[in-house]
Length: 412
Image (cartoon, rainbow, N blue to C red; front, side, top):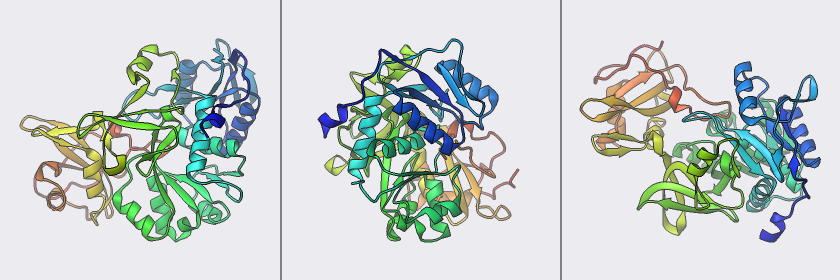
């Protein structure tokens, strides 16, 4: 497989970089057409604010723009180097968005290695209900295009449309919030042959329910820099490698032929991210029996409270199982005594009767050490998320909070 994956269409010394700002079905067709022509693509969210689009265009410097007004050349555009396939702006969960360059060989390897891991072949059909301007949706397009499988693209995640597609479509990539909604609506998720789940922490209760109801679940881990999932159910796909910079846990480092080339126009950031061919992911993890990877969360999200390392993902997973919690996020806030205090941002199932800090602390202490129980509670109507469903922890609100053992405050 390794030799075959390295083959690709001949490329000129430079390639056009086409920014595509179209609705998702049209964008997917435009991506495929550009790749057929040997061009590179920069998918954009056509619904994004003008200022955001302007910023991405200024950072990426595409040679052309394809939108509702047609295709046109852009002044000051910079062609891509030979073999460039895609440029993707990250969602910026923890800092300013990065502009990631992905080579055609990396895209092809990722697409075919994923297809091989899923044993995808005749009779399979992909569904893309994720944003095409994000790597998760673009990777679905690439898998279908490189493997020659049919592709169905939805303009957005529409629950009724996804339920109707199940069965006729056999392969789908979802984020946890989408799968939770699908499971709540019925049993259609089990009609997909494989459901790839990623894009953020996967709550244990969600995975348990899905598997218990017969869903062919594949938990994935990856980044924009790896063109999406390069680890399936804790194990690297073909060609991928994972190691931990620490013992027994530390920062996750990855490498393989699916790795990105560079951050466009940012050699300093590129040099910081790549260490002797390994990508420094910024995630914390550990390797278990058989080399199985467990991702603990972002290194920069780690909360150190009273000398205890608290991984927000771990606490969030516990809070999510509380009957009064619809969604939860955890972050650290400065504390004169503890250094940082564990703060829970909770969307209550019943805004008129939200859970209290005392209830959540007691609930958490039954499942985790006391230092990991929240010391502060902020009730919110919703959590800030990217279009693909990623929690934007940096956008969690400031505001009044319950820091006592009493009841929570009213929703704003």
